[in-house]
Picture 1 (cartoon, one colour):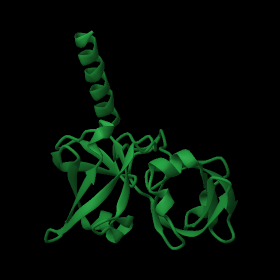
Picture 2 (picture 1 turned 90 degrees about the vertical axis):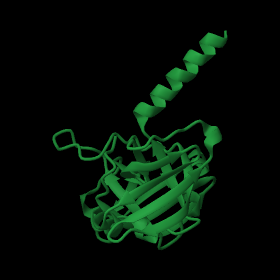
Picture 3 (picture 1 turned 120 degrees about the horizontal axis):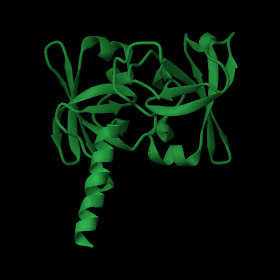
Amino acid sequence: MFTGIVEKTGKVVSIETDKSNFNITIETEIADELKIDQSMSHDGVCLTIVKVDHTKKQYVVTAIQETLDKTNLGTWHAGYEVNLERSMRMDGRFDGHIVQGHVDQTATCVKVEEMDGSWKYTFTYDVTKNNITVEKGSISVNGVSLTVVDSKPGLFSVAIIPFTYQVTNFHNFKQGTMVNIEFDVFGKYVARLLDLYMEQKKA
């Protein structure tokens, strides 16, 4: 489990294919604190560390086909900047919101606006997957815990402060950028319960 508070960014060094899997080598300054079998959020995707090279400050994770199908990992390349967060500590402050590291779907950035000291990003997503947003609700974009500003079916926007712009890969976003979205877990349960209620009423 994660909080959506990005610790550091990392750089993709290489991607090697193994059958349908991707073995991704990432370089980051916190690599010397990592260990094999540890869970790490990568742009909001929970992946397990399978190899660590403390000397080179690199580690390796494996993404299977299911992950590649549901996330933006298939678009990654050498040099790609990725948001990183280690799993939540139970003895610290909970600064973001509950992020499971299970991406629901991808979204596409359709607009970037500089707002005199902050930035507003608008995204569209496939509404047929029955995910929803609400204004002032929580959402995870590439693993970053954010508050929804505008909410419409298949579209939402978020605003970020300069600190977030600098320490995450949001500064690389432009029109057409594909991102990973995890919708608020409580909202998903409510939506599912409403679906079941409506199904029972029809029965």
